[in-house]
Length: 223
Image (cartoon, rainbow, N blue to C red; front, side, top):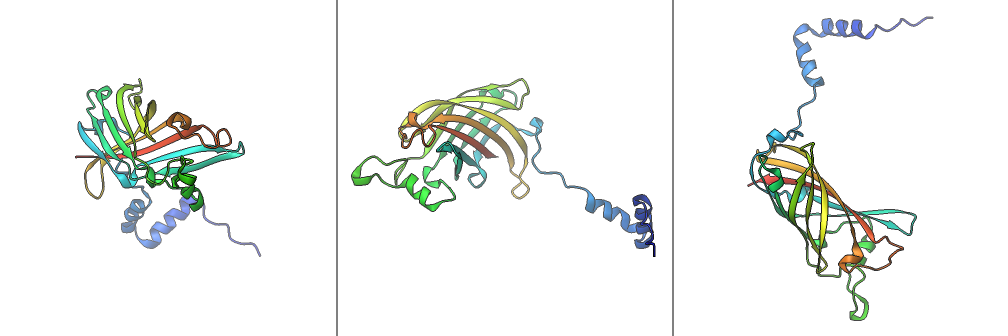
């Protein structure tokens, strides 16, 4: 026995509409449409002022190579700081952000302990030690690219008691009102690469790479 051929999709849609009633068709269209995200990559939404980080949604990821086999990942959270920006003069923007080293997150509890444990017999710790001071980045200057949505942020990174110049390549990712608080919010992502040996952290080089890639995802809320 041959099975009946299914309706072509346009005819099937008409049949469905007739079966359920024309009045419900607009409701179906609403369900199929996607709501607009609160944050949009639209620089016209950015307003001048001072913004503070949303610590729960601001992360600094890090990546190192392990023994030449593969890369290992981790992150820092709970970043606190400010962004002062005027869309009429974005090159005058200022960033000052502090990241607690003790917030480091990795998939292995043993590795986290190694990153934060004291040195043996009172010696220098392999990495940060048990009571590390927070890392802090303070911008010196901002160069906005021609696209108007990306920039190079030059500044000073202080970590492990050492201050070194660092340039962050930043990208504007969205602006708008936060859907819960209705506070104006701006998002950015950034990347840079540092050498940990320049900050006094040289354990296991080159088995664990000296170069550390940093990947930043930041949300700032207007004050």
